[in-house]
Image (cartoon, rainbow, N blue to C red):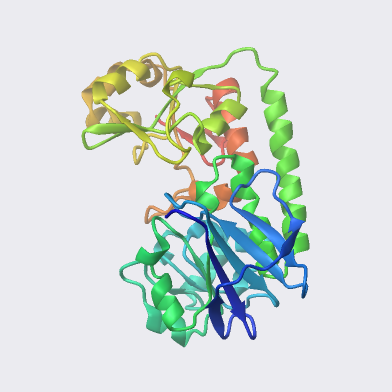
Length: 366
């Protein structure tokens, strides 16, 4: 979408009666993120209203800015991504979650307990969204996950029913600390900005300390990522979230600078033949899909058995904390714990990789 689309949701009482108007408030910054590109907290110069300002919160968005007024804390929240559940839990706000998308995939212990007691409902997903349930639970804020255009999602139906919503774009951040910094945005929405700011400051401090220590290691191992999907092997661009983590752990992504593509969120498909040639050069192989054993990996393709990382047992997957139903805590709580992910990667690439107990999100395939 070209041009600038300003959607300003102004509420007579926040999260109850909302409407869109076509004027842009004259604001000044309250919180300008140090790492995240997708949000800021601003104040209306005329009346002091605070806004969560969200920019380009779905793939392909072009100069879209959304203003969401903050006049009182949200108290009954529907979280459409598991990472939002983890963020709310981290600032002590789990008891205000009334709905989630994909309840069986949630990892956060407190949320799982409330789901089991029927205190958090599963509201479905785009295309099978249970609006009647959201109306019945009297939600005052839906935290949406945008994949493509806003107009193709559930937002139009929420507008028709006057159910307040805001898109959260943390998954688009390519900086690990940028993804984690979105906890500050949720902190302001929930009246827990002090807790969120303190949490992020601690995370930032730990992450930078681990990164700086990793830079003192002399060897930069080559790292291969992912496994084939159908006939293609999708490789993340070199400016992506996962590659940044590898670089901060003082590893080297196998593609190198010569394959810079995309905007950080669009993977590049390469042939199985090219991927195998890359894999045979790699010291380590990470994020191997659903595989949790070397035998399973080799059964998927016998050619994998000749890959040096497989022969040397240097294959690791981010599945250590998966739920029985296939939910991934790596993508849930990992969104606000990049320091823990980075510590795992440093241990894998530079430490004693024989001890799985030293890892939190990752496990070594046996």
